[in-house]
Length: 486
Ligand code: GLU
Image: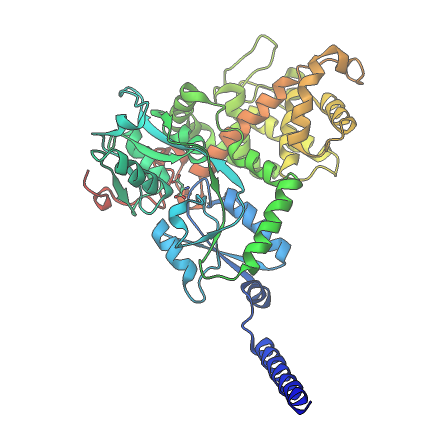
C-alpha cells in the first residue's frame, strides 16, 4: 500500500517535472525557420543570375524563379530579398550559413547526389538533361559518343554528377567542370566551337537557343528529372512544408502552368533559321529604328521593346514592306488604321511606328478592365491582329467552355475555333482566321523576351547593336582566361 502510494507520488513528481521541462523547453524553444522569416518579415532566397532563373529587365527583377518565389513571399506576407550566388557550390554553401538565405530557387535538380547538401521541395518542373553540340560537327547519339570530346559543364551541377556516374561505366570518358561560367557561357562556347559538347537542362536550352544559332541538341541523357526549391539539410520542416503547400496551390490554380508558359512556352517558335535571321537583323536593322521605337513608346506609355517586337513580326523591320492584303510599312498598317492614326505616309518608318504605337495603346485602353497585365498586353496584340470583335467572340466561347476569358492561356486555346463553322456560326462577328493571332502573339512575345534580355539595364546605355549578342549573360560572363584549360 505504502509502496504503491510512494510510487504514485514519485510518478506524480516525475510527471510534473517532465511537464515543467516541456514547458520550459517550450518557452525557450528556438523559433522555427518559418517563424523567423515571419518575425523578420523577410524571405532571403539565393538563386543564379541567368535568363532561365533571375535577371533584371525593364521593370527590375524578372525571371521564372523570381516570379514564382515572389508569389511565395507575397503569400507569406513578407518582403523578398534575392541574392545571387556565383556558382552552384557557393549557392549550396550559402544555404547553411547563419543569417544567410533560407531557400534556394535556382532551377536546381533534386538529384540523389545532393542529399547531403540540401533538402528539396516537391517538384515544380520536369526537365530533361540534353547533350548539346555544334551544327556542322558530327552529331553524337549515345553516351559512348561522348568519349574523346571536349566537354564542359557547370561545377557542382547535376550534370557533373551525371557525367561522374557515366564515367564509372565508361572510364575513358573525360570532362571538365567550371565554376566560372553559367549555362549561357557553355552554350556560347559550343556555338563558337571552343568546346565540343555540354550538358544542360531542356528548359534552359530552349530559352537560350535563339542567341546561339549553331547550337543543336544531340540527345537526351536519361529521363526527365525534377526541379525543386531547396533548404539547408539541417533545416526544420516548417519552411519546406509551407513551400510545398504553396507549390501545390500554384499547380492546382494554374499559376504555375501560366508562368511556365510565360517563360518556357514559346521558345521553339523561331527555329534555327529564324533565330539566325533575328540575330542578324537585331544587329543590322534595329539600330536604324531604335530611336523611333523609344520615342513612340514614351509618347504612348508602352514598352519600346514591345513595339520593336511588333515591328519585327510585321515587317522584319523593313519600312517598305507591303502585302497583297494592302497593309504597308514597318508596322504594316491598313489604310484605314493609318488614316485614323494620322499617318500620311505609311512607308515612312517614323510615321509607321508612331501610328502603330498609338493604335496598340488605344486598343489596350479599350480592353475590359477585367483583363489584367501581363495578359492585357497579349490580348491587345491579339486584337491588333484579328480585331477586337473577333477577340470578344473568342472570349465568350472561352467563358462558355468554363475557362477564364481574362487569361490569355485560356483564350488562345479557343481562338482557332473562329475558323470552324460549327463555332463561328454561333458568334457575333463570324469567321476569322483565329489561329493567326495565336501565332502573332507567340512570335511577338518571343522577340520581346529576347529584346528584354539583350537590353537589360546592365547592358543599357549603348544601342542594342553595340552589345555582343552572343554574350547575353554579359554581366556574368567571365574573361576567357578564367576558364579551365581544355
Ligand atoms: N539543373 C541544373 C543543376 O541543378 C542547373 C541548370 C543547368 O545546368 O542547366 O545543377
